[in-house]
Length: 89
Figure 1: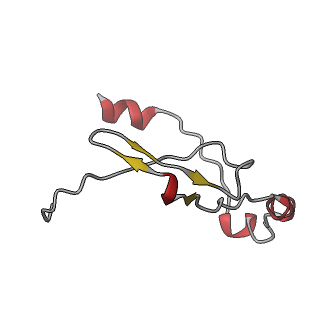
Figure 2: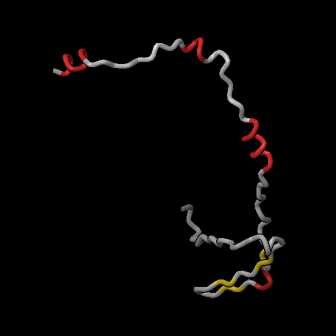
Figure 3: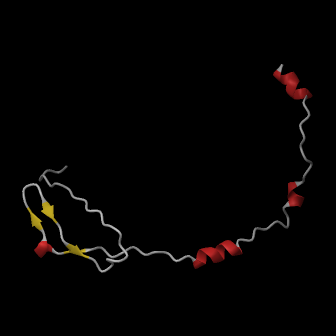
C-alpha cells in the first residue's frame, strides 16, 4: 500500500541547476563585522589582595580580609576552600 501510494503521488521538485544559480551568490557580513568590532569587551578584574595580618582562624570559623583595586567594578567574589587532611586524596 505504501509503495502504491507514494508512486501515484505528485511530488513537486523544482528544476534548478545549482551550478548556474549560485555562481554569483555572495554574503555580505560587513555590517556584522563592524558591529563586532565596536563591542566593548570587559576585562577580568584583578584578584583581591588578602590582608593576612587581619585574617583570623579558630576551630570552626575563619575570617578573611582583603582589598581590591577594582572595588567599584566587582559585584562579588566567591571564596572556595579545601580542608587539607594530609592524605593524597
